Length: 133
Image (tube, rainbow, N blue to C red; front, top):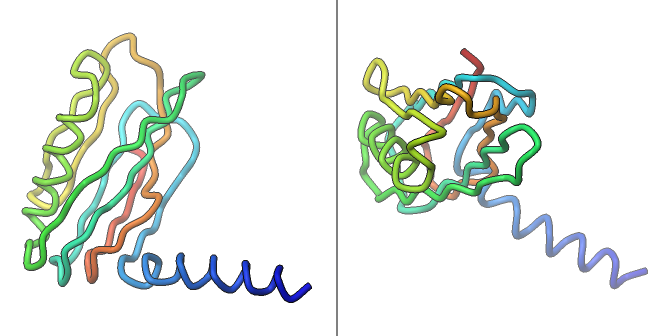
């Protein structure tokens, strides 16, 4: 029994720092043709954000976005936009910035609708809010 508590404690200890460093709201697992990623606050540490995009009836795509300490919110949005453009198919997705600190992720023509969520982040202070458009 004590082994189980040790494993649970270890898992909680491993997950808690990422959850404490970045606030994320609005992770909606339903499908949409367009999503908005709202970025608030600048980075107070260097770290990585991990997003998942799951097109309907297709495997999940993991996207990693590296952020450096001191990056302001508009530049965090630029990094997210650029990382998504580098890692996603240009035939299936269109990614752009809106209002400086927001990133829009849209499906192209016949591409399937998709879910978008922030899975983890260890970047301090940056808050991410994801919502359907």
